[in-house]
Structures are given as structure tokens and as C-alpha cells.
Image 1: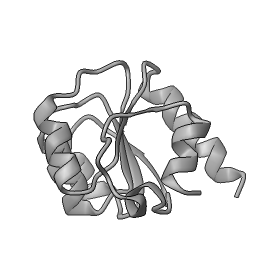
Image 2 (image 1 turned 180 degrees about the vertical axis):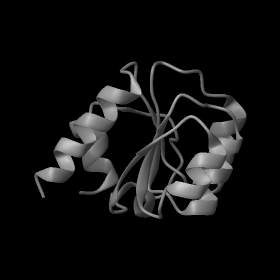
Image 3 (image 1 turned 90 degrees about the vertical axis):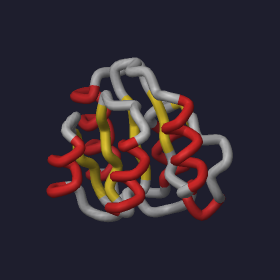
Image 4 (image 1 turned 90 degrees about the horizontal axis):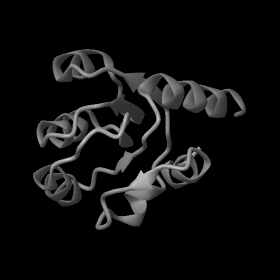
Amino acid sequence: MKVKEMLEKLNLQLLTKDVSEDALYAEVEGGYASDLLSNAMGQAQPGMVWVTMQGHQNVAAVASLIGLSCVVVAGDGPVAEETLHKANMNDIVIAATKEPAFDVIGRLYALQAEK
């Protein structure tokens, strides 16, 4: 499944408006949920979607470092403008939802199981 398809199926709000088509059509390889940046750095794998409540600019840096396909900020968490600027500069897709992380990752798992 591609990032763009996942955004539509999970009804996520795309926050990074200046990412490339390549970023939107990147393959989703799975998901990882954590609010600890160091935990995500050690456990998430390239191509995964990272579901977190964190919205500060280090989220974009970690996503870029790992090579994640997307970051979903769950639970209506605030996302700083600096985060979106950094994400757009590094071609990182950031989306948001009011849903809790548990629900988002469960729905993502169900989508991946359909493959």
C-alpha cells in the first residue's frame, strides 16, 4: 500500500503540503507506535509509518534519519510549524488525526493484513 492510499483509507489529514509525489507514493512497510524518539530510532524500520503524539521538530529529523514513509501525529496532538517546515524540506510526509494512537495502529494493521 502507498502512503497516499493509507492517508485516504485512514482519513488522515495531510499536514505537509510541499512533499514530492515520490513521498506520497512511497510504499508502507508496516507501522510503529511510540512517543519516545529514542525508542523509535532504535526500533522503527525504513518504510514504516510512525504513529506518535509528538509534534516537535525532532520528529521530522528522526523520520528522515530512519527513512520512514510517514509520521502520523495521533490524539489531536499539536504539530509545530518548525516541524512541518523541516518535514517539507526533507520530503517527510506528516499527517494528523484526532484518533488515539491505539486505534490508528490497529486500523493500519488491518489494512496491511489485506495485502
